[in-house]
Picture 1: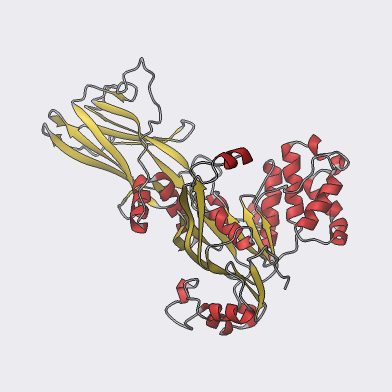
Picture 2 (picture 1 turned 135 degrees about the horizontal axis):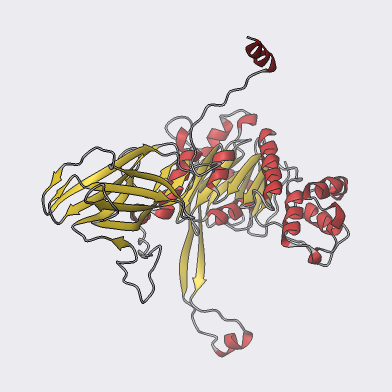
Amino acid sequence: MRGFTHDDPEVAIEWPDDIALLVSQRDVDARALREIADELPLSAYPERADAGPSSAAAFYHSRMPDEHPAVVVDSLSKTFSIPHERVHTLKEKALHPFRRTEYDELRALREVSFAVEPGEFFGMVGRNGSGKSTLLKCVAGIYRADAGDIYVNGRMSTFIELGVGFNPDLAAYDNTMINATMLGLSTKEARRRFDQIIAFAELEEFVDLKLKNYSSGMMVRLAFSVMIQVDADILLIDEVLAVGDAAFQQKCFDEFARIRRQGTTVLLVTHDMGAVERFCDRGMLLERGRVVERGDPERLTSRYLELNFSQDARAAEAQQAGDVPEPVVAAEPDAPTEDEDPEAATRLGDRRAEVLECWFEDEHGHRAEAVHGGSRCTCAMRVRFNGSSENPIVSLSLANSIGDVVVGASNRRGPDLGSFEADSEAVVRVTFTNVLAPDRYWVTAGVAPDVNGLYWHDRRIRLTSVVVTGIGAEGLVDLPYELTTQRGATITSELGS
């Protein structure tokens, strides 16, 4: 196993059975490190915490050598101190030598624990500021953790930013040699793979051109091509799963499929939920530096979008963690101009009946701001009748993010809703199997007196919205279908009969 080098006071030792223990603490000898490891809890293995040994070290010793996890993070914490004001010059420091600088603490990671098995594609997702990149940099040894431990079993390469170390005044060959060496390849191996790197990047005609004359797309293609040539047991990747145009992105996806097949362990930080569901075996969701979900990528996707689009979900998570909830920021999708009546911009009708609110429910009947593709869901609206009404017509329509109406539902063809007295209310629900493609959809809801004409009691345009999650569909909807194949001999026999 290749050793790790870090600036003091980072300590790197060889762990039994080729496990490296990185301890971001004071300088201690190997025996003391061994004693620390023997006392580690099994919090990194929540699925095994109810059985087996009583410490992470004992758990390692209980397994066969080829069963050791590729990466284990145990109770990792990281805090940044943010000064209220910065001293930028020596003169400022000299004029105010005794000024005390006040700091705010940003707790980026809070006792994060997880384990990744060899050959596993592990996704790490979360909103902006949740601590994903900080966690990846701690695992890579770029940041020193304040508390906790990291075990790494194998050679590791980090891809946090493409093109780090590129010199714009050098040609592709020189930059490839430098970048490949920085990523761990020997000079001899980098030379041997140079033609392969250039061919993958589709830059054969621009090898002698200086990088300052490259377009941004050419540069990221070259950087990505160098990245995938690294021979490492563990890859740490931050948002660089695919680059370039559609054709090159497909090449990138094919390359990651190959990396996955050959058993390389990958830790991927991303906001692309389609990539998480497509590639990842398991994953982890972070929120404000804490782990809020582990396990199945499909479940992570739904929970991630819930935290992104639901203020109530974020408030509940903050309350559970003991944090101050985020302030609610109201935003109108189509704000009217100063000359427009705010109500007239989104409502039509005489208000003899009013649409009070509209919402979505998931397959369990709970209100949701995001629903998963393929599941059952419900669109509901609450109506108040200010006057008596006989068999009113209610309607709902859903438009995607570019304004195409993809779903419409009403009771114009039945059933009749019956009679409603003045000051009464009713809730109307439309339940369907969600075949919508992943996107944000806006709901327009209305109530009318009868089936004739276009007269409305109340019609509220873009009243609310819902996000549909899942892997991208080929069209506006993702209809279930069956695909069959008929062989040539069968076709011939059927044509002859």
